[in-house]
Image 1 (cartoon, helix red, strand yellow):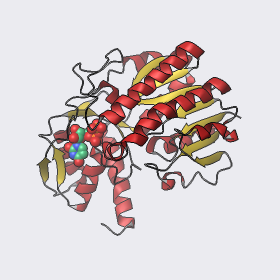
Image 2 (image 1 turned 180 degrees about the vertical axis):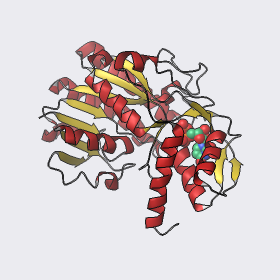
Image 3 (image 1 turned 60 degrees about the vertical axis):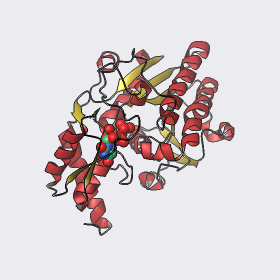
Image 4 (image 1 turned 45 degrees about the horizontal axis):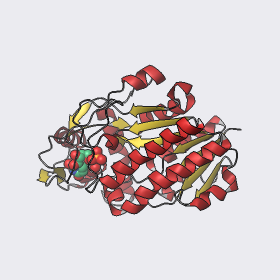
Length: 322
Ligand code: UDP
């Protein structure tokens, strides 16, 4: 039976991936330190005979002594806070997991012969000066600001991957994951869709930062997970950096209006100060993903937001907040 290690298994992407891999007759070893992941994300997995949960920090060397990780076939290294709200509240842990944690998982891959997928980020491009961003673009990143702990540590994680690929021949794949959303995203996540939908459904002001003209491209989680699985599967992705995101671009204000329209909310849209270093434009080129993986996203933003609204409505109703 294939043994798959997922770091960040209690997270948004990791838990969804585990849920898909278990029925494919894989043994999934999920690791999480629960700093930003939630046990609730794994509640249907914990009793499954092909799922084992380890509550641990992958940045710590002691993780290397866990015998459950012996003879791993595949490692998805997804552990890291991803929302600015979370990574800015724990900068040193963020730096550690993306650098020391990545090195530990690469070392595990080297000693077991496992393939490794590293979850990098569109933040590796910083506040990009090239548009759309393809994988050749080396980015415009600030080391001296509130986003640096995430952006720069993710970039250093990529460097570790490069060294393990070129020196030791580890089958490393680097996914630069762009903004991802879906039903199931924690309601206190702090990112745009979680905030806007919660605000619209509860009648609070919809908080647009800046003038709302900055752009993002939003990929539904199911599409993202499909892309990550293909990267793991395909040898063509070995030693490659590949953007995984949806190339349709929206301004933040367009997203606010769309959420307001789809929820039928009377919430007013208000404008708050733009956080420092907030990237102005972001949109992936996915030509490489199409060419190497035959992958492209299927779920349109409107459909994805509808699904998320349904989920948030249900959760708010269960808590008696609607
Ligand atoms: N944003 C906003 N209001 C919010 C949350 C986010 O206007 O309540 C904006 C934020 O300033 C950024 C974009 O939405 O321009 C995406 O932010 P998010 O935190 O979701 O992810 P990022 O891409 O910045 O990491």
